[in-house]
Structure formats: C-alpha cells, structure tokens
Length: 460
Image (tube, rainbow, N blue to C red; front, side, top):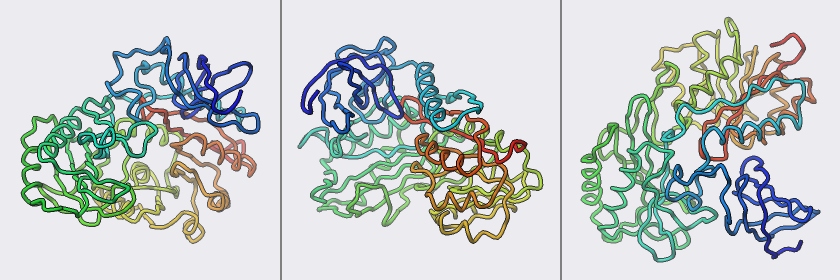
C-alpha cells in the first residue's frame, strides 16, 4: 500500500469523531467522514509508522442503515452533519459505543450509564452562524455553511434539518434580498467586499429571535442606511413561528474569518433575548456563550446535577463556568457557588443572570482557571469542570487536584480530551465512579459526556 494509490473497501466502524475504519489486505486505514457499512473508494494520502490515512473519494454503496429520505438535500456536501441519513437510534448506538470504548481505554470498574438522546433530534439548534460566499469561484451569491473540506466554498442550506424552520426562512429571505441588489460578499484572501455572516439565535422556550447581519465597513458606494432598512422590513414581514426580539447590524473588519463586533447597531428591537433552562432565566446577547441545544442542555445539566448529589451547606467551584448556567442551577441548594471563566463578557452575563434570578450566593470571577484558581480563598467541597474542547491545561489540572475534594463532576464536549485528563486524575488518586453520554448534537459526530470522580472508596 503506497501513498497516492486508490483502494476500495467496506467501512467496519467509525471512531470518534469521524474516523471511518477500513481494512484492505490486512492493513487498517482511517478514512474521515466514512460511515459504517458504506462501500467506499479512497486515496491513500498519508502513510507513516505503519499507519495509513485515506481521503474519501466516493461512496460506492450506502450503508444498509442509511436512508436518503431523512437526509437534507445538502447531505455529504455541507460540512455540518456527518450522520445525515442515519436513523437517530442508530446514531445513538454509534456514539454510545465510541464513548464507552474511549473510557474503557483508561478506566475500569466504573458504571457506564449509556447515552441519553436529545429531546429533539431535528430543529434543535438555537444558534447558527451562516457565511456569505459562493459555492464555486465567481458563482452566484451563497449563504449557508462551509462545504466539507473547504475553507472558501459556501453551500446554501435552505432546508437545514438541525435548525427550526424560522432559521431557513430568515436565511432564504436574506440571500434573495442581497442577491437581487448585487451586493458583494467579503473575500477572505483579498479582504474585499461587504457581506460576511448572518448570525441567528432563537430561544426554544420563549420563541424570541435575534438576528445580526455581519458586514465589513467597505460600502463601495452602497446607500447602507437604506439597504439595511429595507432588509429589516423584509425580515419583519416574514411569517415566522417565533417573534423577533432584535435585528442588528454588526461591523467587523477583522482579517480573520470570525464573527465578532467592532461596532453594533440595533436596527429594530433590542440586542438580547431570553431563554429558560430548568426554571432558570437567562438573558442572551449576540455573542453570549450558551449551549446550542436548549432542550438537550436541560438533559445534560439534570444529569450533572444528579451526579453532583447533595450540596446543602457546601461550597461548589464551577470552573470554566461560561455564563454561569450550572452555577445558577445549583445555587438554590448550595451554600455558595464560585464560577471562574476567562471570557469577561460571559462573566458579566453570569452576574446579570444571577441577579435576574435573585441568586445572591453566586460569585463569578473573570480569568484563566490556570492563573486564578490558586488565588481563590474559598475552600471547595466539590468541583464541577466544564472545560472547552481542548480540555484542561495540565498545570491547571494539577492545581485543581491540589484542592483535594472528594468529588468532581467533569462535563466534556470532547471525549478524547476527557480521556486524556482522566488518565492524570487516575494517577493522582481519583477513580471514575460512573459516566453517561448525552447527545447534544444529533446528526453530527459530537457528543457530551458527564463523569463522576471520587477520591476514596466511600466518597460518592
């Protein structure tokens, strides 16, 4: 087997998050985005130390479990949803096995509670960042998601299955409006053009919608005020299930392809909306961190709350606390909750939300956990960890272990990072008591995991 050669084979399984495994002539090959049971053609593009990786060229035969009728029209082209076309129960089975295999690789004698599905497996996302561009060079204006494997090409997604239909109506109307007027999109290499992104957020519980058009300041003779006013009126005339809380214009001249604000103007309404989780109310702004699956987040946090157990008269540290969701859910039954989060806007939102919910025993600190955790004066009785995808910095993990708490609850959005940190925790005297997968991201290869760790046989 040589680099550059083309082979065919049947995918045996898929390892987290998207690594299809094929065996050809006794050699194991990893092919990304290939699904179990598919017969595929692939090109060997990496070979080193006896390991081979292939690039998927063509699906010759679908998997026996695939059903094209339940996939959207852009399945396999859009880079968003790996498991489009696979029935939801089969998706859960695949993810459950992936996470158990990962946990089993570092831990033993623990209870694996399987996987909990999302209450909604279609139309579940409450936030989307759509990009303007073209599907091919010098093609018509597109608005949607990046094409799989491409940094530049954009696939228009008018019937995306993982968002509420209101998202699709707003996307379609916005694309039609700016296409009719010949407005140019921002080209990343040349740093020229006007249209950059369309940010849409929609609360599941309240139905409130926040929309933001993100542009550069390169108006190139456009009558920007009239252009945006007419766009706003087109949106307000749409027949939606939800209601607009605000329509915004965000200016962003960053050279990086990120959604951020140099200046924000409210075109209609306000620059925030409200959502509720487990009876707690949250005020959300355009860039607030908030779980993208509201109903799934309730399952996740209810699971975490069950793992935390009794908190009466106890001090809880919520590290990597985001907008303080977990802290505020636990606060009514704890002595004190201390949250640490590096994003200052998220900390301000957490403080505001705690005040909104009448919680006076929450303290939120802005700073990097690595730098802040050593300066905390409270002594925790238990610690909740909800780090970003890369997991916990090794030095920060050592300082967290230094508190010597009997129990930790680790919430992970990337099980491979969790497994790496579990190996360290195990070496330092913690054991995995139980774990549960929670599918927050149906149709994609991602999944959350909740793990309870204890120090000492009697600490549960």
